[in-house]
Image 1 (cartoon, rainbow, N blue to C red):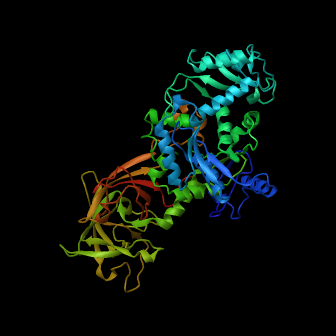
Image 2: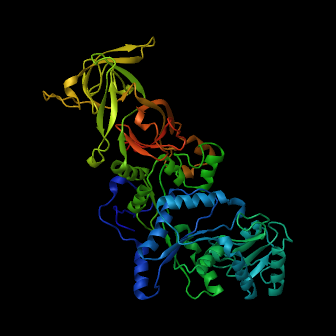
Image 3: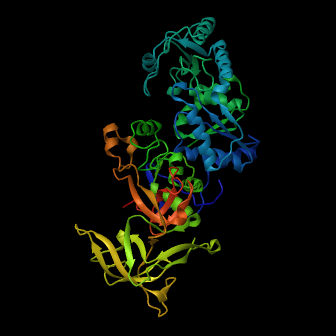
Length: 572
């Protein structure tokens, strides 16, 4: 991977990677070390990878790590990376997920060489199954799923042979054909590989490689009523595509002997090498497809792209730049060690990116009217405010200033606390890009709530500086009362209050959902120049945080999502 940011990998099981613990020195990528050695030794002369998602849900931040590893490894070595949908379980898969996966990968900035489907190999895989039967290395088994599980044994006890294990080749061929012809109901029979029921690796104890499922497939329709199992289809699809390095997460490490057995038995001369890496685990976050599905189907969130979700489409809608996610993946690094990454590190990557790239804007989220009593009535003027303080080449933008403006409610206190330097009776502050104003009084409603502030301004301080050199400690943002646009602003926070929500049972899981994860503010104000923002436009609202225009935005009716606050509040 390009060394665009520092890398850090967990070295102790269960360690939480904190953004403050990132080391400045780069770390070795052990996958690339293996590839370097094999290329130097002539074991391989090229690098080809693949990203093989199952289209049964939306991609999440955990998938982003696999995507980056697969695509960036191929890119580094001048190789290719294919996108292959491992669609061997049609009852849970859909074209909707196929389309969303493509969109997410392209958004992250990657381009596949080819798009394949495991279902495109079904004819080939069926022939491989027949070959194993004819070699005496696969058989049709009539045991139920529960019986197969019982016969398999345990980690300390060997399994026992199925009573159907010694069926003859001709009988197995006939039964497998009858399975394929749809003669038997779901679950009546399966095809199993004949390996070793006493193997210390449970995956090698005669695994099921085909099952009956009378289900229409989103790619092949009703052509098949038997479908290959993932552990059978995956290695043979890799081999058929000439993949050289099958990169996968660590839970597949115990499946590697089975992966190799299928490839070797079918007779591939240059088998792919499987290399496993640790998954990406984030605290206060769900990456389980099953639990994410529950959040969506039970309307605990507003769809897969809810900005509180750890899905890539949710992060995109919230305003996370794709480059910041790639930066985050690189900072975490590639390791075999289990680790839990602090979500604050991801936020820091987002904040770093937006600090450089986001235009500045003044937005008042909870408006409080200010009347500048000594400013001429009916007068209006244009003032210039910088677009980005670190990019003077972007210039300035004009904002309207007049006798009445709005400031944040939180920028006024009737009785200020210690070190409060904003507006209170008798105090002077600077209006960003405008004038010094001094609070002279305020009005309240019948309940005692402050409704209007009264101030005076110093006309000699235009632009925010006093000719006499006097200083003020408070600078606040504002919006003109006569030239603004109303916006809805959605303030997002973490979805869960529990550090490890994936470990919770349903009742605890529901209780762990943060009731303050979404707060919707109506009637927020920006100057009228932001009335035509487009979905996806990002801004730093001065003193507030980074915000992104939501797809719900309409002309003249902007809707903004808070992407991240200006400073980390994750640990507070």
